[in-house]
Length: 68
Image 1 (cartoon, rainbow, N blue to C red):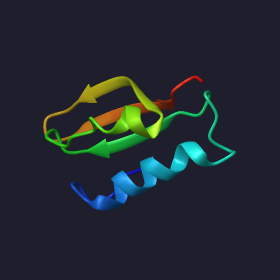
Image 2 (image 1 turned 45 degrees about the horizontal axis):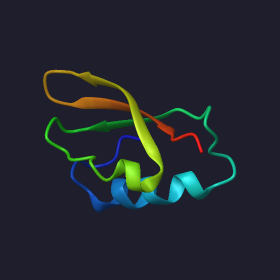
Image 3 (image 1 turned 30 degrees about the vertical axis):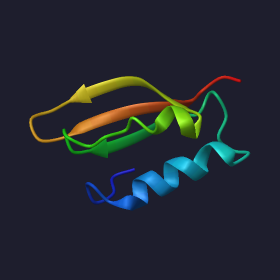
């Protein structure tokens, strides 16, 4: 996903994605975001950040569904 930074859209999508049958523990979700975006809500969505890659002006988060 490469949504507008700081948009509520990312938060809303990440809350819904783990509930979808096509999102499994093997699914890798990659989000491009600003360096200052807060993703502390991910565990309550059932998601875990498995890798972060910072660049000069943005960050890529690699996210998986938390195993049950």
